[in-house]
Image (tube, rainbow, N blue to C red; front, side):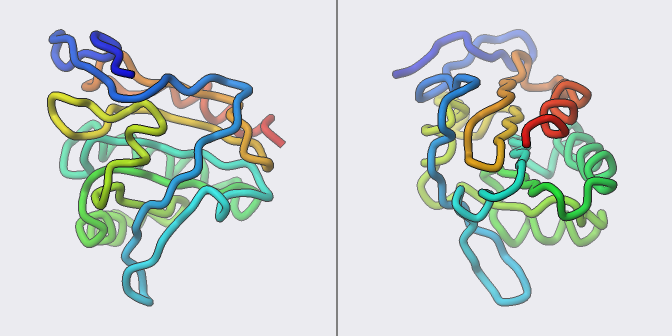
Length: 173
């Protein structure tokens, strides 16, 4: 199912592929790719279970707002340490994501790329059909993988509501 006008970019309506994720529903499974010390590795929803998790979705780490979003979450989540799991997802290649996160000292979030099949984007309802990139979004899951917070930012060029996401993460359990 497509949702036309679900998001805009500089005021122009865009279409999101997939269903909207609802708070209280089980988060869809996913398999994104990261580039780490051991080479290419997969990050799956199952890897997030056991503690609250936040998934920060960005169109591209090569853009200013996405960089601000990732740096802001990195800073705000740092104090939570290993009590939570945090992941940034985009369609950037895993190598580019790794390079950015290394250069910017992003240590509180893992990075995962949906470049292989865009399945995360479709299953989480954030794949922009016209641009073939992900919309800006934030999802918070509890330790069992139930969605406790979901925000797809209406205007792709705007930042998410950091306070609401962090509050949801703190109370997700």
